[in-house]
Length: 109
Length: 117
Image 1: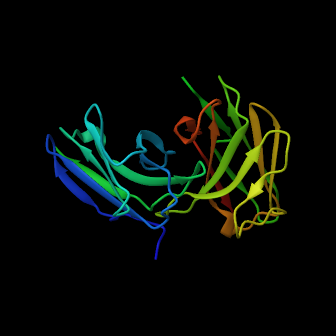
Image 2: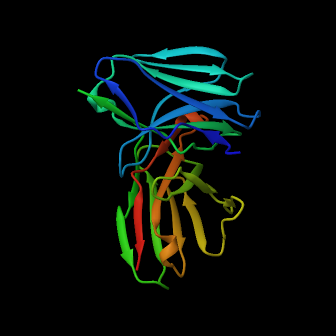
């Protein structure tokens, strides 16, 4: 079983719609959860993070966490073509990140 | 902002040679830096944690004698790939943690693409 599982995609979403990205993790000791965006050939850039169960909103992005189900998700509202990228889920244990393989998202104009 | 640079951005070398990659935090001090490796279509894998003034901590399966890490100052960590082989070809990415802070203040460098012929 992989430590961090994400649907590899590609996930295609029309421009303006909501993109929903999911992630499950196996380490119950994970303390915080990070979402990164990675464009092809570039390094990851932090979108947002969440520590507590529930929802956390930041602009067009909402992270959702359910520790009991070991599940974290990222919603992107009003999707833009510039959101097309690979999204990496990364739980952290003792400030060490474990990355999933990412979901490739394509926003269709 | 918090800017992390890497040098070189790409390098091609012959098998058996050594390659040094630099990671610098440009506008903050970083007691802790991390080195990752990413193969095509795979996730980032943590190789080691670099602490200023002390020995690096390597992840399981990473050869410390092959991947030499030196964190000589609060703004510079270097990764040297010794006796590189084609299987070492990868995208090497560093990150630096701005203090005080935790994982949320970990900033990534732009990466170094290594190709070993």
